[in-house]
Length: 166
Image 1 (tube, rainbow, N blue to C red):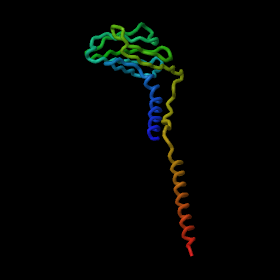
Image 2 (cartoon, rainbow, N blue to C red):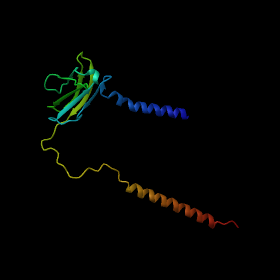
Image 3 (cartoon, rainbow, N blue to C red):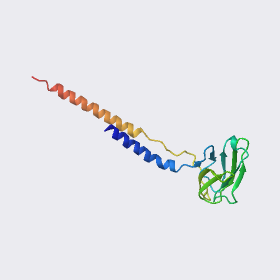
Image 4 (cartoon, one colour):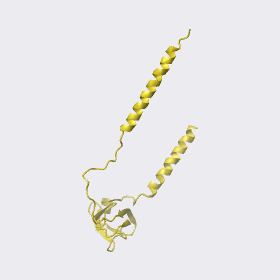
């Protein structure tokens, strides 16, 4: 019975984690990449950094996407093997950034979502939004239940002591 419960729990965890693995951005072995902001506003500069290690120093990396207004961007990795790209988005949407090495092999894929900025902008309110948990009602409810339980125990003891056998 316990073995079956453990197998069901393991299967549930596996099913929950499958989409997160499938949706992860791709990086080739030996490469790491980062995006300065994965949800930028239109007109905001974005920097994509590809790090391939010292073995990839002075290698040409190309960054291509439909969000780039020009042809694909190219950069040569520095002595540390880092290539950096900076660009600005001109339209809102979901974009996939694909970095390739000189031979055309994909070394990194990143997904970004650009959003439009309203003309008025967002006015600061001066107060942070409340995202916590108000525990007072829960504490009061728990206290009432403890008092009710204690009262029930006292009433049961008095009834028992009042029923003295003769």
